[in-house]
Image 1: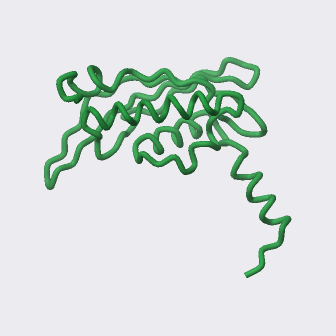
Image 2: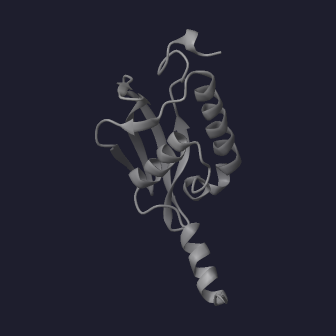
Length: 145
């Protein structure tokens, strides 16, 4: 199958564009943190801070693995977006881990995850992430190995 080059270039540009809103960028970040998959994450990380943010994301996932990875992370209230002007916004999500084991479902306490987002290259991206420690906040410190 032959794909026209213009279509492929356009689709790549769309994929690299970021998200339509600050909360959408944070939602993608949270979804990828929950799944442990990096696919889709680069498009919501600010280009100027990409390597630093990806390293932080990977370190947090490693901390989650040390301290009982949940089945999923979920936001328990609507994501709060506070505009700062100049295409910047502070986003706060109340994040709660949930574990499933057979027919038992256990949800942890929600804690705020704060993000600074910026509109960059046509879309919203995460510029900074202020995440509470996994071990000692979302899970007991003794759960972490």
